[in-house]
Amino acid sequence: MSDTLVHTTIAPWLTVGDGAKAMAFYKEALGAAEVYRLDGDDGGVAVAQLKIGDAAFWIQEDVESSLASIGRGSVRMILTVGDPDALFNRAIAAGSTQVARVHDEHGWRTGRVTDPFGHDWEFSRPLATSE
Image (cartoon, rainbow, N blue to C red; front, side):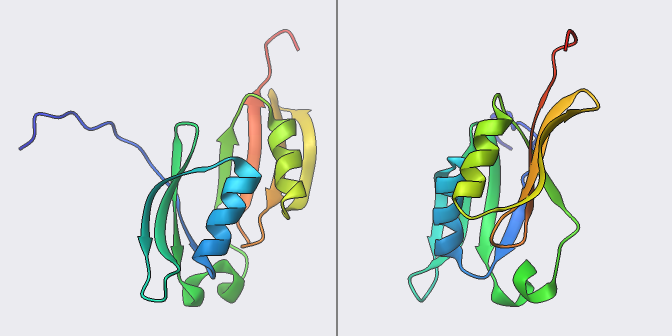
């Protein structure tokens, strides 16, 4: 047993039809950084871990179980950031589709997009109590 303490986290694992294209998109649209990468036999990205700030998520190239082949998913990623407007605009410019414009509601500033791989991303920040 290791003496190292492990910090418990939950990280989404997203299946995509094209791992290299997804990795490039998430880097451009969300400013994600590559943490880990396993290339497939064809030289493409088989599995990769990415981080946006301290928030980690995984992508896996799996055409048969990607949202593009099975239809719309039921999971939404909520990314809490300091400037949801800027990230929303960046994601739209990179090819996401607007689901809900950025707006203030229920104590949050939030907007939602669907990325080119069918995954929904909500960019949010809590509003100050004086707003």
